[in-house]
Image 1 (cartoon, rainbow, N blue to C red):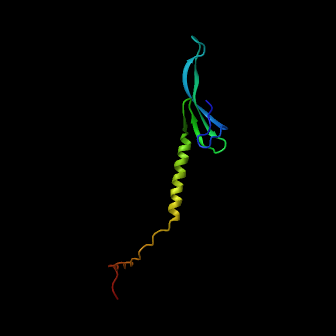
Image 2 (cartoon, one colour; image 1 turned 90 degrees about the horizontal axis):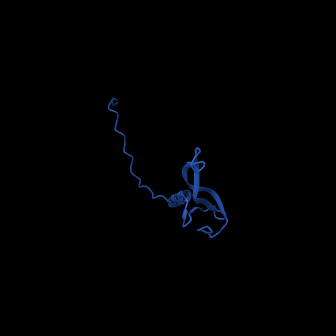
Image 3 (cartoon, helix red, strand yellow; image 1 turned 45 degrees about the vertical axis):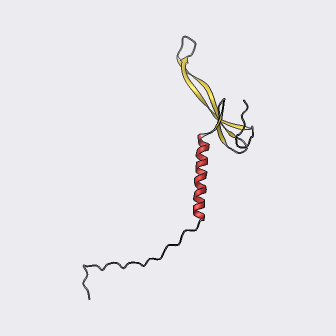
Length: 108
């Protein structure tokens, strides 16, 4: 399977890492110390053109968790900018209440 970017279709990818299954097995079949064996199951990559990050599995392609976080942050910033652009509603002028006189002072 040849992977290409799901967003722009570019097939030039940057590989960031792999997702693996790890098992502890003997170094030689029946003897030896236990050593970790890594079996890659997926690759975390990003597009070289549009920088879209995704995970390539043998049967599917899905967005990387970092890409989902980036998209949510971009949406939140977009909403914040829209809220900042809208003019605030003018506040109604309410008369200021006079503070009560201090009962400890004597009148003149």
